[in-house]
Image (tube, rainbow, N blue to C red; front, side, top):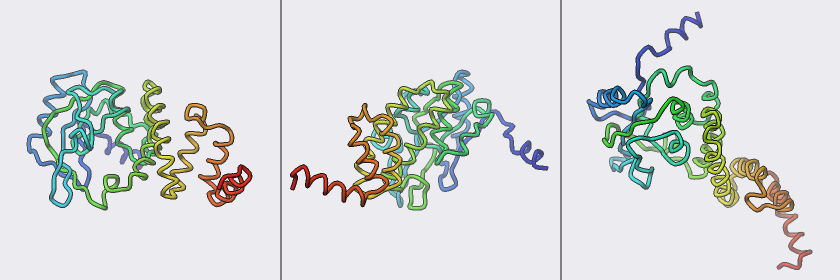
Amino acid sequence: RTRKIRERTVPKGQFIAWCDGDDTWNDPHKLQQQVDALQADPSAVACFTNAWNDREGERSAYLNGTYARVPDPVVTQLELVSVQGLPTCTFMCRTSALLPFPEVLRLTPTCDTVLYAHVSNSGHFIYLPIFTAIRHVHPGSIHSMTSVAHQYMITLRNLPYMDRVSHFRQHAVIEDRLKRLAYTSWPLALRDGDHSLAQLCWSILSKRRKEVGWNATTTARNYLKAYWPRTERIIGKFWDHIQGRP
């Protein structure tokens, strides 16, 4: 019975389009325009457009150069794993590029960016500079209205999965992005007392301590800051005292 249910849920169409439950499509020609674009370019595996961010009736463009980079007409895997964001509610891809569905996606905090990396193994994406959807940004949304620290944590956890599903083709770029984001997130985590983020950053940066300028003592003290902050404060005061610091 389970096997039959799984077989029935396998998509049979040539294309798959996404729209999150709290978002809406506002262009009746959206799907047809994307299908036409993909059929005109056999080497393209996915197509997306711009979308409106709607915050209590006030709208702004998702792809505007500030919230997210304005893409070129053709978007490669390298751009997707490094800088390019896209509104998931406008995403359409070829079924053949998505399936078989990688099991690793079940492990990711949010699967969208990892899914894009997976799909882009088969070809490039097309960007259509039109608005076809509305993203309703509200406190109940999964990612949009969360804190910066939380968004950093999600990205830090997703990046290794992006590396895996892209078969490490973009490893150098993803590794550099992981290191830079962890280094940026570290002081934020300490300032806000976000122990989960601090521990994640330490686990990333301690493996790259020479690259980020951490010697053995700094690495050890930073471990305490992440895992035993009270102990580190006591040791820090004692250390400052014997060093003659006020």
